[in-house]
Length: 201
Ligand SMILES: [Zn+2]
Image (tube, rainbow, N blue to C red; front, side):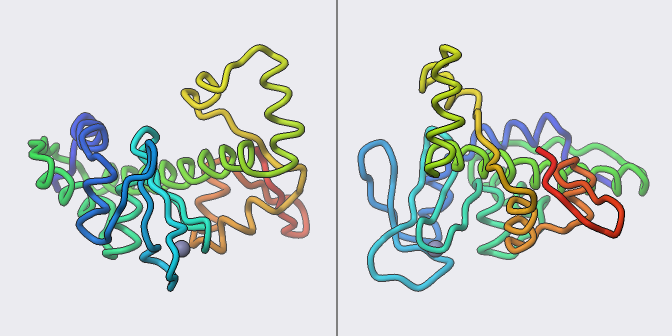
């Protein structure tokens, strides 16, 4: 069984300019360094869907969806993760290197891919907590600034903030379609006695 080599995956992700990918499926208008458009995931007349070419992510301030080029294709076009990568490789003329894999390593790769996706999701959540919530700004952001981190550094290293709440992250992740199994495997959620779960980040 063949799979896309990790190096190819990285090349594809580096080459896939998010604004070019999303423009195939929706209309985007430039606003400052970002793009905005009507959200393709919910009905709206005024655009609340924002795309950041610098970060390679999109976010809708109306319905809360967010993600990368890959997750956009998976959610909007119902592509599998490898199909989304193949689509992007074709679009951006990246040659895919395939490697042979056994059934076991294929399963492992699928597992790694879904963990990667859930971790990406967590990172974006924590970042938006830091920049967009009152608690994040008051506690997280001011702490980082006190430690001498500039805005540029905070953004470059995707620093974020976890809200002081036991289950909010897990609840929202599950609502967005991530499974408890993957959240636990990624180390983002812990299940204790009595099946009580809590955020672990
Ligand atoms: Zn939306």
